[in-house]
Length: 251
Image (cartoon, rainbow, N blue to C red; front, top):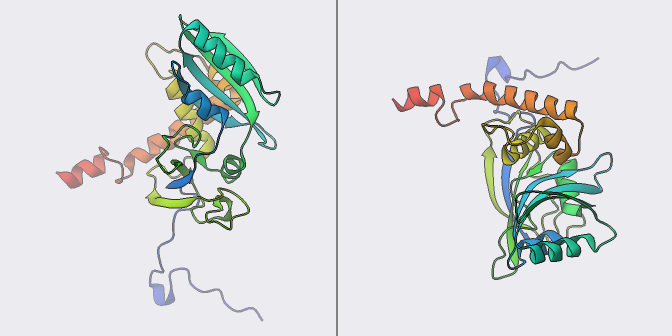
């Protein structure tokens, strides 16, 4: 004989403990070692300006990622940087010349273990751990969004065998207002914003955005549509500053 399932609201209709929304993205800041990496070498190269526009793991395994960067500098500095990046057989490099002294660089390279673990969990980076400012003690802050703030994928602690070895938690934020936005949707929206897809006039088209994300045009369009739909629905969330509900409470 099966036992009756307990009432989700507690006995006699009393409300049980509040649960976190399923899949809510939570902001974390980890303190991690500043390990050597070609992205860090590029950001610290004198006389060269670089911006990381997008980073996306390639399916199906995510063992390699595509990086889209904008480089600016003199001809000699650009040639030296490109030669250094393309010098490794594990990296595939292609570039598109831009205005004088600028290039748009697409690099396919190996995905680091901590990054791969984060991507597999559905999380995304707010800052790149290979480009964050180095502190005097040789560590950097890595800001991420994840649905598993206490999951084993982080590997926080000296005995970690997976994830971020030697990492420590610096701060843990609450769920972001648009908690129903998936990692891929937010990544597509942020990449589109950085590249100027939403600019007036538009700087890049859907084909360039899809190429930066390493997906098809139809997949990129679908991510944008779904992401924008979630953001529009979130305008009614009182946690959003400037929302109608927030203004009513403030007034």
